[in-house]
Length: 150
Image 1 (cartoon, helix red, strand yellow):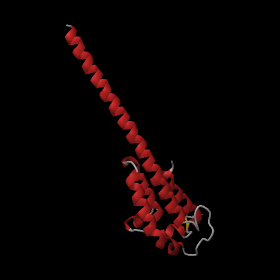
Image 2 (cartoon, one colour):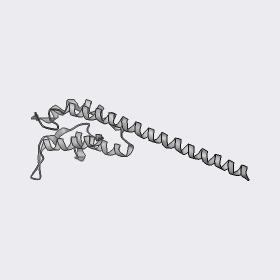
Image 3 (spheres, rainbow, N blue to C red):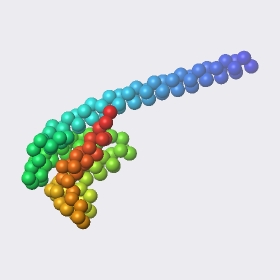
Image 4 (cartoon, rainbow, N blue to C red):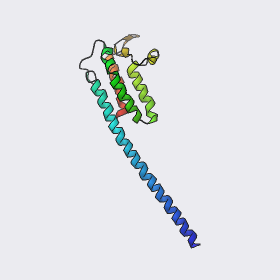
């Protein structure tokens, strides 16, 4: 009978040790991912702020035709977006890509098939409501950068 009890203690001790190892591994992995996220978020914020420094967060020089300013910046911003999206968890990636699409083409369903169409930053009046292009850009960039908060 005592041999049977000793065997059970050994099994219980082994199970507890395995759970301890798994817990330490999970905590280390979580910490590693957090460090990786912070670095990627910093790089993403830096890339966006550097590219849009003349018009975001404070407008220094708003162009007469904003697409002429934003179109050349597309490649750099798209690279930063795709690198950062790879770090995001799957459940946040969809909304991040949606925020990127809204920045590029707005919410107009006709423009969804285009890579970039910055007409939303032109300052139109729709149904007697003026859409402030600077406010629209700030809102869209804020939405993108909200995913990089650490």
